[in-house]
Amino acid sequence: MNNDKRLYRSNTNRMIGGVCAGIGEFFGIDATVIRLLFVFGVIFGWGSMLVVYLIMLVVVPEGPGVMPPPPPAPPAPPIEPEV
Image 1 (tube, rainbow, N blue to C red):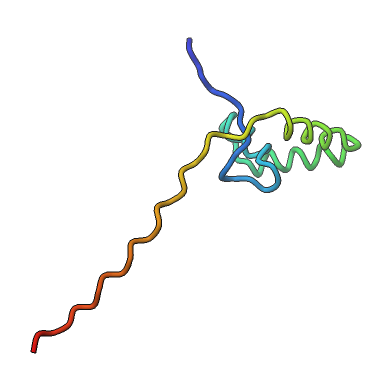
Image 2: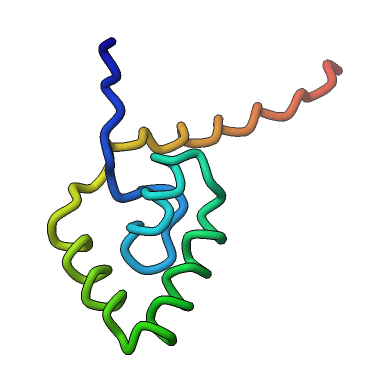
């Protein structure tokens, strides 16, 4: 079984560092759920999840680059009627 699934920080769905969105993409869960779990962990875990987030921000690599969308095409020249 060759599963090449890797954990990356998200490039597209990031709020601060892309850690929660990357975890959500890895497990197939909405990033909002992961963010809420991190907030509850920070509140009820006396800030320990904040330390985990900061460590992951440093350790987890940023995801592969996403190609930017192509620039818009220039407008067509106006058609002038023949006289």
